[in-house]
Image 1: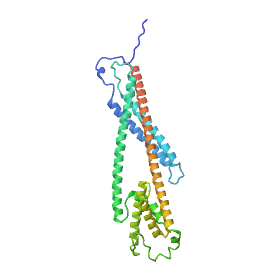
Image 2: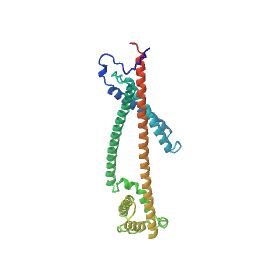
Image 3: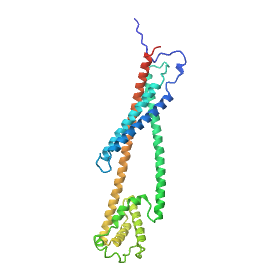
Image 4: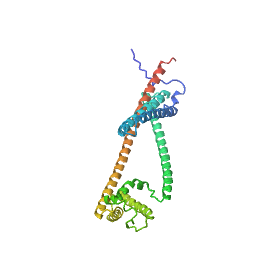
Length: 313
């Protein structure tokens, strides 16, 4: 008795099926659009749920918990979306009867993988476009704000605006000055290194001194240290403006410099951690999306061929 082994990949029907390509671009493009649509719906649903629990007054989940939940939801949304797209592409791809044994599963997997590749490229292009649009919009808004601020004679640097608090600490009146503030309101203001001015011109002089102190602080943060000459100058100005003794003014300059440097370091660390988390979770979402699309393409191909074998001839 002779055993006969028949594989479905070996069957080559008559006609032009042998010249048909085993890959379908139309099925891959359709699957990619379906994957993006399902991902968008899932992300929109997760955003709505997250915003319903978020609270600016701290009564809801913490920002860290919401960030982790959002990242996990993004991974799930990507996996669900690309699984849908890969499955559709596997089902829509026509089987190729080219006589190659054992290639059907691989080709279905490749069909699902190409759905993920097309979707990733489309999402990357969309993110780049949105980033460019956001950057250009921010630049125009910042330019308009800088023009308006310059018209009022104030420093318009964004970094300088972030340093205003530490400049306030520098020129905060000392205890003695705060106590005698009411009695010395109409008295002549003490001169500083910039020069003396009448009571009416004092605000303009203080704005100029403040802007100069801001630039000195920003330079010290960028260089990682404050030059001795700049330190002595700031201490002299602080002493003249606040009434502090030179030694206390020197200590205040050192303390404010340290606080400003720590704040800048903390901001940079937070930005670096946020970028690292974003990169990691983007990698995880794309990895799960690619795996889901590949496996779903294989499943779709298997179900397609199973229904084809059961169909009447």
